[in-house]
Length: 166
Ligand code: S3P
Image (cartoon, rainbow, N blue to C red; front, side):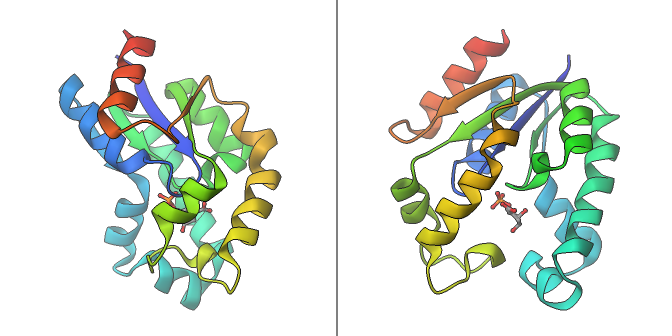
């Protein structure tokens, strides 16, 4: 079985959906951000603050390479991972890349009040979300499939993915 890779913006449900999906398929789930935090021994926010985004992207890239060589996993990527062409290429090679999407208001609502996403810790998170979504659109559209999660619950998204992959 090939990997199932969940890509997409922060707040689109990659982690919740990924865990449930892996349970349904009886395969292992990995959240690349969690692995980064465990290996670096600090939170993503600390990594960004202390070492900078470029350092984080380097660690993320190394992990993408590592997990692209293993199967079968359900992999939840960080929202910026597939913006790197090489990452996207490796992830696609290892399995099917499914983009989870949501509208701006929903993303704002789902990420509101959370402190673990450094890119959204700004005065105008809505403006930042809009800006990042626009910049990432050309990369996100290269995914194999896209599911709009705006009005779906976790189980419904899982069912849709199962019907895509089985
Ligand atoms: C990021 C998304 C985060 C995390 C980091 C950067 C991004 O992951 O990797 O804060 O660039 O969109 P989630 O999408 O799991 O929140």
